[in-house]
Image 1 (cartoon, rainbow, N blue to C red):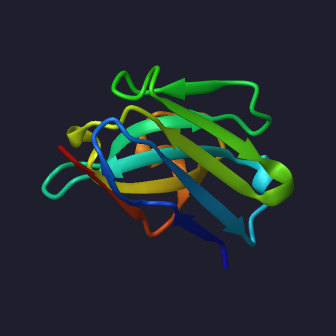
Image 2 (image 1 turned 90 degrees about the vertical axis):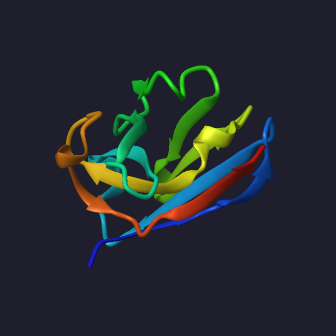
Amino acid sequence: QVQLVESGGGLVQAGGSLRLSCVASELTFDSYAMGWFRQTPGKEREFVAAITRSSSSTTYADSAEGRFTISRDNAKNTVYLQMNSLKFEDTAVYYCAAGLVLATTARYYSYWGQGTQVTVSS
């Protein structure tokens, strides 16, 4: 059974940094593009960043561009999201996801983690 497990969330002051990790198991990791999404109560899941299988290409939401960096280590079956200059509005549950293509839309991702809470205090 495929599992994606996120970690690294927590409480941070505005302007601070966090690094999220997502470890995949029972998945041919290097066959999948990986993405990060986030969600706040009452809102739809929002795209944050995505990376191709070989790390040859990345794409970011406008809100993440210049502050967040997605990367992956296929040897460790792990994808990362380095988040710098965090803002109050970055507060959300962050999810990693695996899909067959690089996409900014949630419906293109087949597997999802359970999420990790990121709270940014102002």
